[in-house]
Image (tube, rainbow, N blue to C red; front, side, top):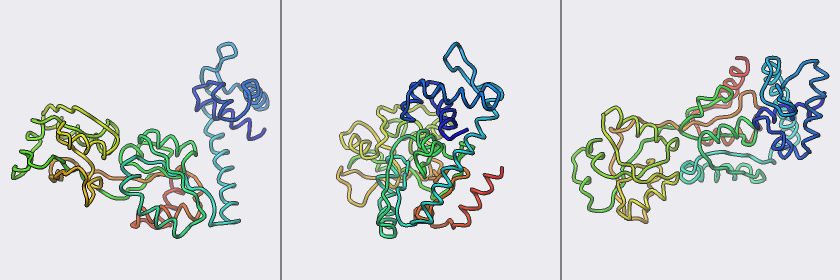
Amino acid sequence: MNFQQLRSIREASRRGYNLTEVANVLFTSQPGVSRQIRELEEELGVDIFERNGKRLTGLTEPGKDILPIIERLLLEAENLQQAGNDYSDQTKGTLAIATTHTQARYVLPKVVQGFRQNFPDVRIALQQSSPEHIAEWVLSGKADIGIATEGLSQFKDLVSFPCYEWNHVIVVPEGHPLLHKEQLTLADLSNYPLITYDVGFTGRGHIDDAFQQAGLRTDIVLTAMDSDVIQQYVALGLGVGIVASMAIEAQRTHQLRTISADHLFTPNVTRLAVRKGAYLRAYTYDFILQFAPALTRDDIRNAISENEEN
């Protein structure tokens, strides 16, 4: 039994049983992957995968029990390497952070700046995508930390921490009729074309829920992942924007005005997630504590340990 065999099993499950993709990920050949899988099955005395001819089609019942064990073995192997790296040199390495555009653009710069002062020799790999992909990257080990508003708490193999709460705001051009409303309502907003985030991004679910619960139809004419893009199209007069409060900077280049929406939409919570059972290097703890100062090392360590036991 060897780690290449275990990796072949794990990646086959992750890649939808496509051995060509598995071979590409593991930098080997497809026949080599097939051989690694078959050798482990022969050593264990059970078939891990169901087959249609030579093609893998799914996990057998024994395979469903074996796969989590393989995942744990590979995770502990990674933890062992991380622990060795940490104790040999706690000030060098790479911290991979998966997050959304909004977090990367408006929240992380100050945190990254402070982190770099503490760990100038640690490289930061910042990856931006949707919350679903962020979770997948953390689960697969491609990212050490995931940061997003939606979805991270829904993955059983992630440990996530609430970090801070924020609200949406309304953005309109100078002179817009909504600026004269004493207190803006959802009905007022529904009378105008709206520009906001793509589904699944930056609290979009709370926006849709609010209108749905009020029984109001909306005309969302444009969506984007990027708050800057939303504001640009609002400035062009295409509609009323709904953006994250942290996206409104002190100096606005689009000559936009803001209207509070705290009373219209449920507050959003940004969460930070790590993989259950993962060994966190010293600089990873430092980054987390800078991003979420209300947490402590013991909070993080205990949460990972509790989830590992469960």
